[in-house]
Image 1 (cartoon, helix red, strand yellow):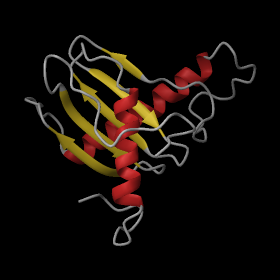
Image 2: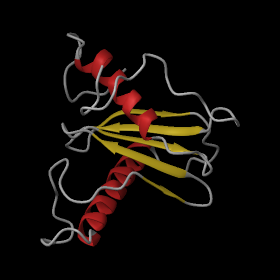
Image 3: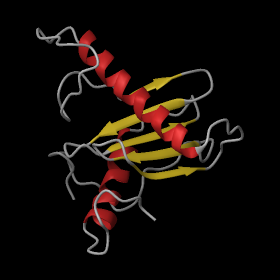
Image 4: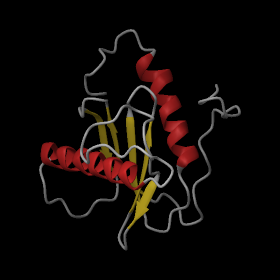
Length: 153
C-alpha cells in the first residue's frame, strides 16, 4: 500500500527502539475534533477526566498548527491567527519535545489527526504514524460495520 505517493509500506510495524516500548498515549481525532480512539500505556499521573484531556489535546494541536502556519517564513499570506485551516494548508509541525515527553503528530488529507506521545528520547516517528494511519484505513475506514465519526472500539 502506498502512502501519499511514497514507497511501499511493509505489513510489519517499524522496529522498536533499543529501550523497548516508549509509547505513553495515542489519540486519533477526526476533522471535527471528535476523539475516535484514545489508548494509554505508561501514564502514571491522571489529572483530568478523559473528555477534558481530549479537548485539551485537540486545542493544543489547533494552537500549534495555527502558530506554525503564521510563523512560516515561506508564506506571504499570514491571515488571522486562530482561523482554522484546511488539512494540508500552511506550515505543519511533526513533533515537539519537552523534558518529560515527545509528542509526534500527523494529519492526513482527510483531516484525521494521529498523535503519539512517547518518551522524550524517541526518534523520528513519522513512519510509525504513517503505518498507524494505514492500519486505520484498512481496518476502520474499509470496515462496512463502522459508522464514520463514532469512536473506534
